[in-house]
Length: 316
Image 1 (cartoon, one colour):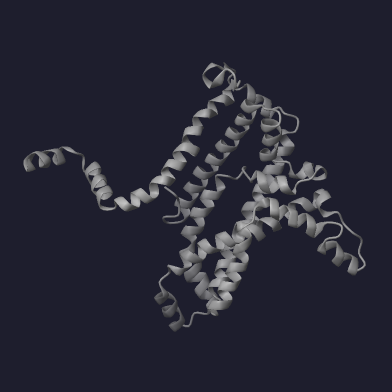
Image 2 (cartoon, rainbow, N blue to C red):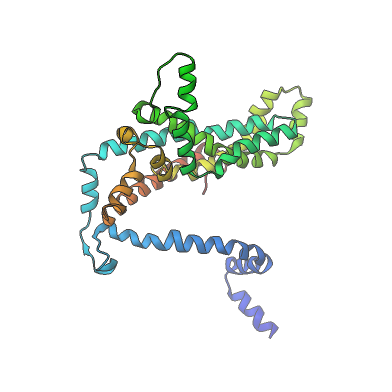
C-alpha cells in the first residue's frame, strides 16, 4: 500500500503535489478565504457571461440565448450619441481629479500621522478622519446640501461677512470642487488606515540608524518611510485605476442637480437613466463594457510602467 501511494505521488507533477500539501497544511486559511472566492465567482465572474447582451437586442421574454444578434450596433450608437462627448469628458475630468487630487491625500495623511508621537492624539485624529467612511453617500449628500443651502453654515458665514448668498449646489462651477472635497472628507480615512498599517511594518532599526547618522525627521520620511511605502501605494493605485471611468453612481447621483448636469453627468448616471428607467439593457451593457475595456487597458499599461520603474511594484 505504501509503495502504491509512493508511485502515485511520483506520478503527480511537482507543482500539484506541493499545492495539495500546502492545502492540507494550511486548510483553515483556505476555508477562511472560501466565502470570498464564492462571492467573486457568483457576483463577479459568472455575471460576466451576461455581457453577451451588449451584442444583442436583448429581450427579457426571449432571454439571452434567443435574443436577436446585432453585433456592434449598440457600440456604434454609443459613439454617435449626441451627448457622448459631454458625458465622456465629464467622466474623464472627474476621473483625473480623483487620481491626481484625491488619491495622494491618504498617503500624505498617513505620513503626517506617523510622525505624531502622542499616541492618544494620533488615535483621536485617525478616528475622526475614519468615521465618515461609514456614512452612506445619501447621508453625506444631505449634509452637503444643508451645509451649502440658503440657510446653511456656508451662506450664513458669507452673510456675516456682508457677501451675497450663493446657491452652490445649483452652480456648475462649484460641482467639481464639491465632488473633490466630499470625496476627500469621506474616503481619505480608509486609505490612511491602510498606509499606516504598511508603515507600521517598517523595521524601527532603520529609523534608529538614520537618527544616529544625524538624519532629520524630514529626511527619514523622504529616504526611509516613503520609499518603503511605494509598493503599497502602487498596488492600491493599480487597483483603483481599473475603475477610472467608474466613479461611483451613488456619490454623483446624490450631489448632482438639473443645473449641474452639463458638468456632472457621467457614464454611471447615464446608465441609470437609460438602463434602469428606460430598460435599454443591451445599450447600457455596451456602455459598461466600454468602461471595463478602458479600465483593463489602464491597469495593464500602468502595471508595466510600475514594473519598469519600481522593483516589485506591479501586480504581476
